[in-house]
Image 1: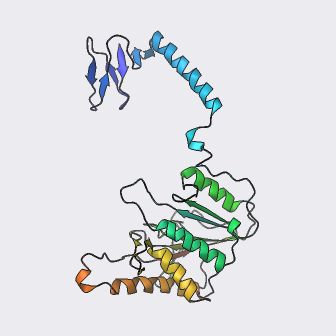
Image 2: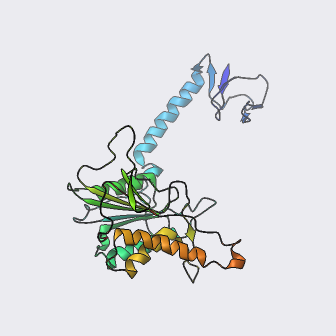
Image 3: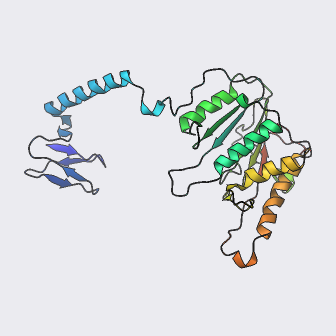
Length: 299
């Protein structure tokens, strides 16, 4: 007779007269006194007793699933749209905090609110044209399911020739969109794959602003705030440049972001530099097509 370790799934011989068995993977398997509570196999087949238990379990599980929704699609957490996406321009803002992880980000909620404010007051977005996913307040969380649903909402009924701006404040995000052209040292660099695969669009235009190069980290910092408010360095410098220069160009926006990061690094107290980490990131501009970066930035 055999049993199966629930940790490594290895088939093991059933030891006689034993209440506890240690698998080679380290898993301790309780065997009980008489009735075996684990899936016991005889030459690869379930014993008749376990087969009856399995069939009963499947029947009960099927009944329970028909009564209530799976926890993964809980209405409280899932993104459910009760009306179609608004016509015209729209925006998706996603603030991932990793609040259950050791290195939780503390500035993403501030970033989401700041970006929403910019869209409404500067670029005339309506509140119902902005969808926010965040791990704080009353927002729906940015789960994989919700992010995919949000992208569908963003792209619903899109016409050909639309323009997409992606502002990605995340680590290693330089070429995250895998666009054909990357702007480096004031010139466009070909980022198309050697395979010749098309990484462009089907008639539309995509602009990508990334927080840093692919080999860099994006800072979650209070260095830009006198009140020590945590925020994403890229999001803060992006929004600040647009508010300060009304007709800013793509080139001007990129230059201002670089300059703001350089300034805050230079302003560090010489005696405290060992404790104040330098913000080592260079914002990156990429695009589906080469374009004149001296044109006005608009959303």
